[in-house]
Length: 160
Image 1: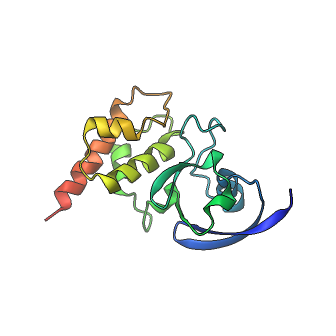
Image 2 (image 1 turned 60 degrees about the horizontal axis):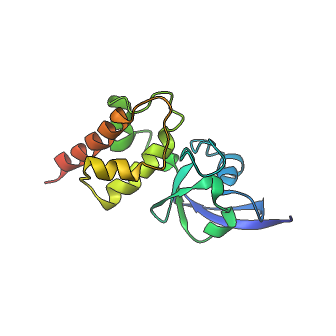
């Protein structure tokens, strides 16, 4: 299939790049834009390691055609830290040991980020539901859920 020009808004910046019409968002992010925080796991939409946000909603980059998201806002794990400082959610994953080997962590964090934007104080059931499409082979998910709860608690403490 022939290459075409794509204009993608990723992490607040507009990028124009050549890609095959059937190029996957995951490949464009990792190979075309060098945003390697998004991980390639199962390649079939089953593990969630490649989760990014498209217009604020979780999306599996390994089964999303890059051309299908032209004109939409894409956020990767790299977008959460500002000026070299981890976001509250990233910090909570670090402090509460939500990341074991770290491979699933970017996808988990992005799925949790989408949840916390919709529901700032989610219940444990809501957290588990939001993360249901993300697999972790290292943990029993307890530390991951605790990390999301800690981030939600930290956000609550900052409110006036």
